Length: 120
Image 1 (cartoon, rainbow, N blue to C red):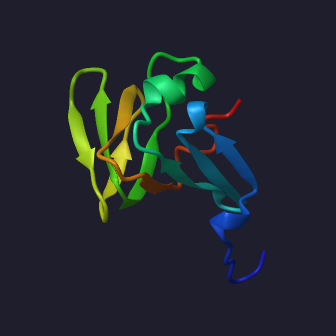
Image 2: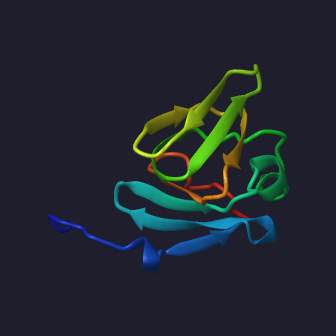
């Protein structure tokens, strides 16, 4: 292992497209685990564009990340909800749905919940 690792998501180890071309996950595999950058296009909704891939009723990933741009609404199965906005850290437990709000793509970095996310 080197003392410094610097990589670009533009040269990701794996790219996982969402259904209907509504975005993608760019995944880097590191010695410390997977780190992902997701681009969620306007109109993206987990229950429409990832659920068919995941095969579960709700997103069962535990996400820990940061919103770079755009906005996303997250709703837990018990009705608790939050708006994820640029510049904010987030932690979202398993059992949620989510969708892009507005006409700008939502770009998020996640260093916990993307290893198996949208994996076919």
